[in-house]
Image (cartoon, rainbow, N blue to C red):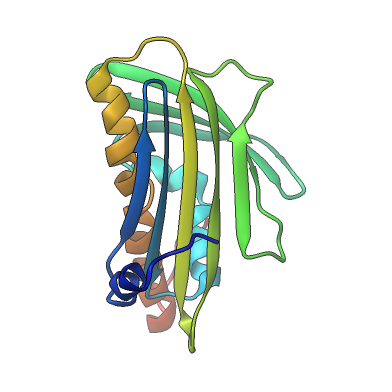
Length: 186
């Protein structure tokens, strides 16, 4: 669990994001905590909807599941920004009965990243099971030379782009479920 100060907890309670990040020469890490006005089951269904990621994340041009076994899902991602193409392969582990999921680089594949590890944690909001507390943490190590502005973008803007869509899509999906209208197949 990501530890927040009392002031940061107030920010999350108000509905805003708290982001923490660290960047150095070839690595970056960050964490985000936020509230989503949808139950955890809806948030998880959005997080696990990999085929929809390119529609939701503007710098993600491709996303495909290439292996799925038990609670493991292997996914190929392609980021495209400023004429650069970054391809990487991630192994996700989402235990069905848990409120967290982790990922690491799929080390059996050749990725443009040197490493990527992280997790999602989605729990019911205190005293309101129709809302969720979402935590996202990521560490990235970049392989070779990437222009500084792109590295900064991946580390800094990446935290926003890696999480804001989760809130937007979860709220939209929850409204659709609550209103009883048809939901697209995941």
